[in-house]
Amino acid sequence: MPIRGDFVKIFLDSADVEKIRHFAGLGFVDGVTTNPTLILKSGKKQKDVIAEICKIVSGPVSVEGAEETAEGMIKDGKEFAKWAKNVVVKIPMGKEGMKAVRALSAEGIKTNVTLVFSASQAILAAKAGATYVSPFVGRLDDINVDGIELIRQIAQIYKNYNFQTQIIVASVRNEKHVIEAAQIGAHIVTMPPEVLEKMFYHPLTEKGIKKFLEDYLAAKAR
Ligand code: G3P
Picture 1 (cartoon, protein in one colour):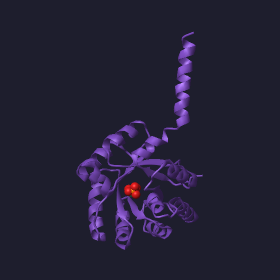
Picture 2: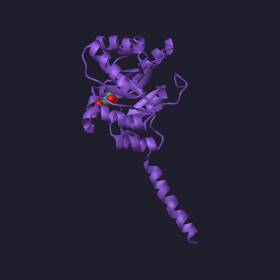
Picture 3: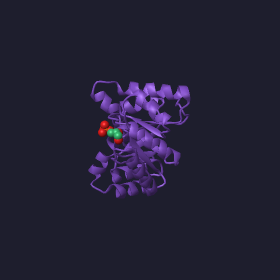
Picture 4: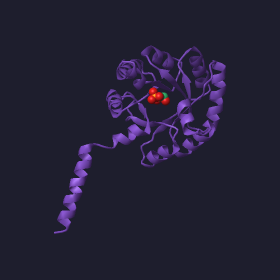
């Protein structure tokens, strides 16, 4: 059972407006996460691309700055929160970040603690009052550490203490990550559009559709 009773939410980890529009049109985009790398790839100014995304998606849209002090992150966060009602401020894990999360949470601004690679970091993020925590499964797998095992640990810990912080499984590389995250009961999986695209397909589905179409036409031609 999902730990909050909701079915797994699908977020797109992307700043590609056309791809977001495409999948939102199919009804599969519950939210969006971005980071400075994705904004750079979009070729647009951060504020402009976030405004476009927030017009398409009514769910949470995470926006990340690049300040190193709590003061800077709080200033940025307050500014981002003015851009649209559904903006969530992404804050990197660390002492300055956790100060910023406490301050922004106290003002009712939603936060997503990013660059989380251990359960101990996830405990601190939840205690600081983060709305969301983003453990990076793919980057852990890349260094030969089981990323999905981290999700299992965090889900268990949050469930033990009824933490309200929601887990966003991030740095997702494939459908297996999505399936395993949902099996554990993670609240949200954020994925590149390419992974969501692949989730629709199976070779046996394609083969079956082709055969049924051929047989349908043959029977119709009788
Ligand atoms: O947005 C954070 C995270 O999902 C980044 O993923 O693929 O750069 O490790 P990746």
